[in-house]
Length: 444
Image (cartoon, rainbow, N blue to C red; front, top):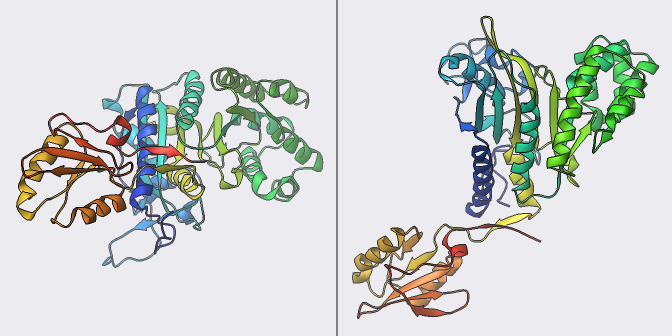
């Protein structure tokens, strides 16, 4: 990987690393568009009031102000701040543009976001996210919850990463269960359960008892629910065996059963029901998703999201939606640090056109133009050094082919990897398909 950035938490890639990131972005973009999602981009800043109206992460938000501003006090609701995710800005975008959008609106969005976290591998302060959402006007069929799980499974399967597990739960199921055992502060219980993997069941049980007033039996029941994890729909019987009844629980159970049944059939081994998944943000109301790389669980979730029924509204109109967000920078960082994939070369250039002498530069540009006209990336040497030095220059940059033009106007091209050299015509010669552009190849 590249040297550490001089500003912690703001990663920068070397050219060959950037090619890996671009491969990930292009793969995601292509998959999303194959499923009919349109690209949008929102502004980098929102008002503080807009950003913080749901959820509690104000300590992680970067405020924006001019250096010469006189008022340096606490940021008010109308002050500006950098967005910390793409969901909240998208909700605002939907409300403002509702009259121009066709619903259900399918959108993908790939942008930088900023969050003031403690930098470590997988956590940066400036990073790229790739989101997909489907938003309805007034109502949104539940089948989109299933479809988005399948789109994400397909997108991640196309990336050079290890096996992954898409873990799915339903907030209605969890909230109905907690209500059924007498725990009324369901958002508080969800926030405690969300810490399960970080602090363990004993400390979560203690949080439930000390902060939410749960009895030992209630804490044990909540943890029993969170301990259910199945590849198929057997979780339904396991939940019912806990003996808790509540209408919301039954609704969530039925929804999760539909998602898991269809997703398990179409993405076998990649989707499981995991009833410990809570998602800490308050705006999720139904299906919730988290995704981990198998064997790299300590990295955290690489893709998460869920159903939100009331994130966006305008007067008496509501815009329910379901969406997921892929942590692109987190994924790329792990791909590079573990050598899961690498670019076949560090530059786009496939051919270096050499100079026999300084007077041949213009003719070399004619050769380059002919090749570029057929979609072949080309550089022209800047000086007429000895051919050996020009070849070494190409080798250092990873350029596979070197072009020579003789005084009589004939041309030859050399594959500097194999040493093979042959006659070539700039109007017809083409490199092998695999050499035309850099490729990102799995390693190991």
